[in-house]
Image (cartoon, rainbow, N blue to C red):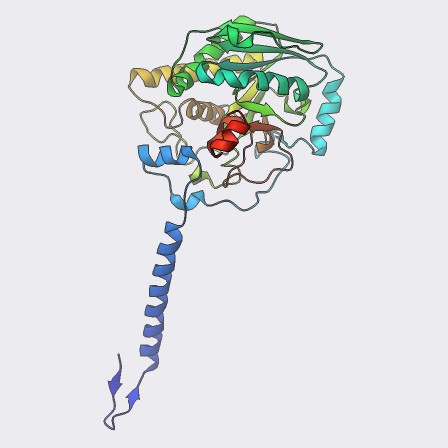
Length: 345
């Protein structure tokens, strides 16, 4: 690029200088890009599972998102619930004077039994105070609830024995069928029913603002992230498959609910989709959660709960004004042994 003039002096033309600067810029950009790429690491086991099993998740989507906006409603007009917003306060005031019977259903099998007392005692303190609540406990070991817990006025518990379902994967694929059977048998006992993971703990008031025909909860680690970061099922042969132009949010399977009639439709439909895949030897990437998200794309929820209602401390979780339900199971995954013992993980 450099050449000598007849007199021996070095001269650089303008074009040569521009080419030199461009080449230098490309070298710097390439080196910086490689350094940045090696610094991104997934903090939650779901991403490790996705990377190992399918290898199609993009690492650049795992960087902690900027503070997401908190619109009062979804694109289709359903309320996006934040407990301290004015519309939530108005909804609580409107429904608090009505006598509403709500069911809270959870599955307690195997080692998850040690969470159940904390789950119920925290719900007694914070879940729909002043309303009539029935706890439906599906368990393979009813003795877990001996001695019985003291429940407040208007609260009762129904224990439903289920066969032992060893292994988390097997339980996740059977839970929708169990839920559908229980809801069918409940009939008109309750008006609304919510399904919650037993390792959730209520830590702040959860009131009538959550009630709706069909209620879903945003996944805390995926709230505010771009659509291509959502771990939807992409295997076309799967009944849970989501096309690239589908989906608005990614919902967690830790808490969802609604009218008994709507919840029966949801649980039955998801259990049928799971059964269809099992006959084909297919397991969706997110197990039960994949089928839930497929259903909620086809049947958009009428009420969407913010990550306040399923939160845990993670490098990927966006800030929320109030933590109302904490996922102890997910939280325990990031604790060291001392903290696990302290928090009885």
